[in-house]
Length: 189
Figure 1 (cartoon, rainbow, N blue to C red):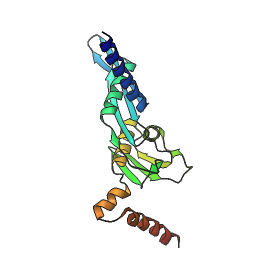
Figure 2: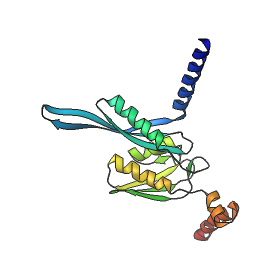
Figure 3: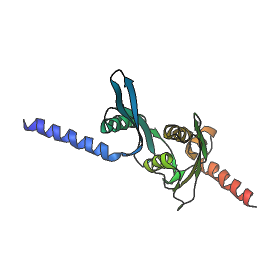
Figure 4: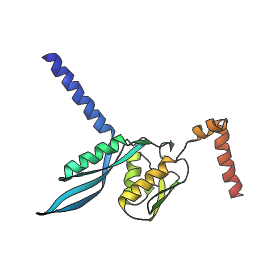
């Protein structure tokens, strides 16, 4: 009996640690109605963004008759759909990016230290859960939160780090970074 209690407690503690590992943000909640013979059946659709604030982020949507259940479903889906994004110095993006989904378009730009997160609603939620501290983002076209979140994730999927670029080109990381610094010096002159 004591052995079963011990195993049970250990499992519960592990689940709690896993929950603490991720930060989730509710981006949008929408009341939806289904018209049936007797009237309308109301339900709720939730859009949630989940991240570990260390370079992993995901989003999910859930529908249910009650708000908490919809949020729970969306959070579970978001945890299943995590992507890893390389961050420069753990605070910003390595390079600028563009993303698109439907009529929603976004532009992401890396920023110097102290800039903060300059982005609108759904994009801000993604950057906060991702762990980005300095970024400038602009959303164009559709302001639908679902499209904005998908377009932002699309732009983040294209992010690469200098190490992977160097390995593809058969060069050293310092050579790739030196080229980036050299281009900046040529532009300033």
